Length: 257
Image 1: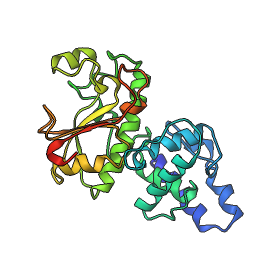
Image 2: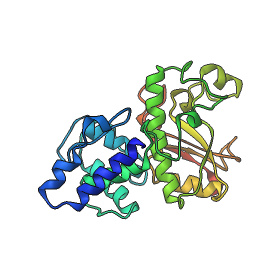
Image 3: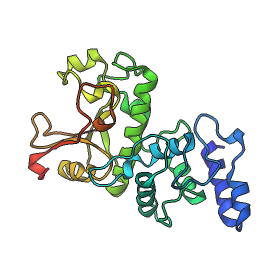
Image 4: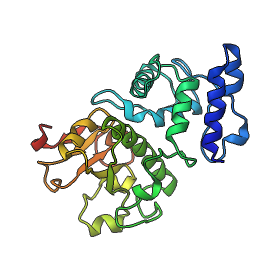
């Protein structure tokens, strides 16, 4: 039986029990945590810790328009607002407190390697074919961590587009790969921090416009040179390892952006 299924069963039981029993049941035994992550307490403003940081990764795609969710392990107003948007998007009580129902939905959305169910590490490691996350400016561990954050933002974008598939044409690129395809010398792709997207059900302009509400600080689409066939999204504001300013840059003139 899949680990996620066990988690959902435990949380479903928790939701059926009254009051104090919920706090007891939602603390899933360590055996269920395997390679992913299990929350064992409700989270709200004022709290901090690794459990908050893990939550922030998963709600990073529910930032405000032009905003981002800082992955800092501190549950402040920014995180609470993102949790409310996540809750509202999935039909949960939107109170900004991450409790059993919120965690149950996250468990439902993710696979056992902590990636969202509609995206995978192999899909994001495809700049010139699977490269194993090596050959860029960061360690493979740091590069994969950036890619995981991007994937959760893509999951949010996908949901806002009616849960229709989004396709990643290019994700992480090694230096060699980036040179081969003529990428920018300090491309966000080198950091596992970007994805080039297409869709068979949404126009490129709809992709670009909707991405503005899901934590992407870099968006380039139709009207920007070299982007007539895809939409580039990235998290440049959160990248402290590159040579660019931590700012928001959007350009897709044919889409009014």
